[in-house]
Length: 305
View (tube, rainbow, N blue to C red):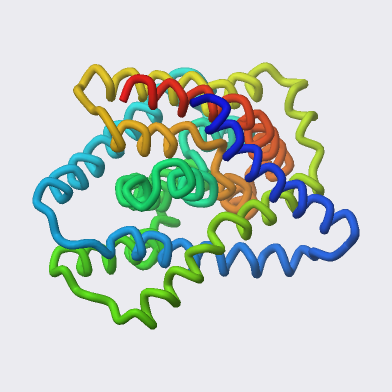
């Protein structure tokens, strides 16, 4: 199973390399990367989620989906508690970035393409639950963590974020077994197919614009990456297994948990005047190291499943 998972992750890194090369040849500008990010986040991600919900209503699947919501909330609460205990609690700019990078995985741009490639639509179906809860917590606690001020937590941003919109529409389609016309379903599928190449090319851009190895000069930075890539995902996977989670759900949630640091770490850092260069380094290096860490965690989850 490890070679299979490794090959899927390697494909993602080939796409990342494409973004890196295009950037080095000045074929992707900062404005272009920003626009691609908006397209991937606002348009592509909801289409991926909606596509995964286009299926006949099944009570057992609904029960599993609600269980995924609960598990994801518990996982994030645990990650927040651990990061608060490990990293400096005084909210220095660097500590805020390290905690954010350790807590939040790239459960949209990286996890969903992997779930689609390794498990299929069922994996995305369960992974979308993780993404929905992830968005709610990121736009509340994540905003507070990076800004240090509750005034930045706005109800509009919380309710209208793309991930939650996609899950809401998808749930309506699933709960009421709404059939999508073929022309609509095919259009959604074509847009959803962009979720693998587009985010990877964007990550390649940021890798080309940063020096990720500078973060290795600080032990707290290394600890943040180790927590994000291995320690927290392995702990979450073991706890889920001990709680009786098996099969596709265990693998799908493990993929979401073990994804590298969220690219939102850099966007939030820039927006709220944290240490942006540090965030770029943590996200970039975490993404590079995921070539090894992600196959390890996913293979173990598939063995346990």
